[in-house]
Length: 406
Image 1 (tube, rainbow, N blue to C red):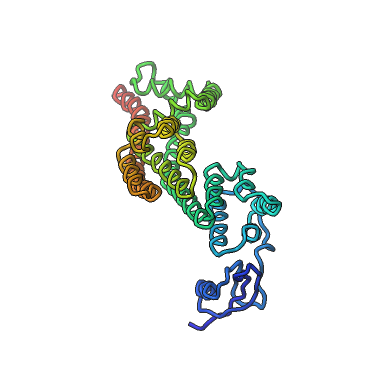
Image 2 (cartoon, rainbow, N blue to C red):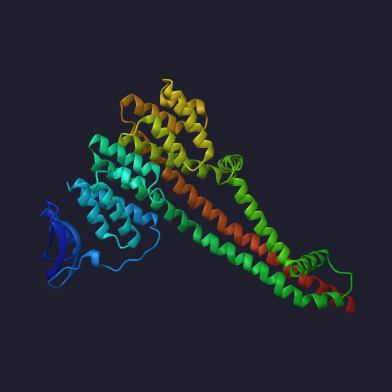
């Protein structure tokens, strides 16, 4: 393969922007070649005498996605690890972003940092995008002088969160389409097909099969009261959302999900995995264990675990080991408490928590695949039973009429 020319814009070891042309077989090889020269690539393209910079790329002004925030953290971590000053890091990350909201956000943070505000505190002003886990971890990294390493760990955490969310959405796409199709078929049969046959059934008299009477009554009710039905569904949804917004409602819902048939085990493992990963990230960053427990409980996304984390925090404050306090709390499984105990003994708690999270992630992945494998045929079965009921209800009166004629 003949070597090709790639024009690039990059930063050298001193943070100075450089442009030039390098020859390589592929773009990846060109980037690797520049990396060996101590240059961090901002933009690269094949051919041409000059490189286009990302600052001139037309972006979009939308709310940054989880993936864009993870990419922001990854770029910040890479540049900080390379030794660039933090103000320079923020400037470059802002230039690289294709989202105009992220560009503006980076500029605001950069202005605060140049005014003497720590990066973590500057980012904390934008709680809509950077949660407490993010800012507290970076604050600990700044205090310990390991900002680059801590930011790298934080980027890995965000990337795994994005990957997990994407995996869950991908797994639920087909069942959701299947369920939506089933609902539309049911609505179509009840509101369009059956009403056009009801006249024939009425001509046959009152001596109709029970299934046909049930079908006709259901169709008649839906066609005459569809506004009431739709309004009731909307009202129930709104009432449920208002209820789960309360402390009692949220805790009741979370407790039910943890013990729900079939899905409860998967939800519990996913919650514990997130708790362990957040706690490990915070402890690795140097956040005090009491504060880390509080934040990890909030980040778990489940009120039951949040209350248990608060209980553990209070007991640890009184001098008890973390593992013992978790065992007494009752919400934490042995797989977590035993690894926490080992981590306390060896002095490497973040590593043990990371292993727990990875192990549980594998179990969650397996559980998700099993659930999807169960849900798909279940939806098809329910849809088939309903369609069969409708067909039977339509055909029975016809067979009955033919029998009477004979």
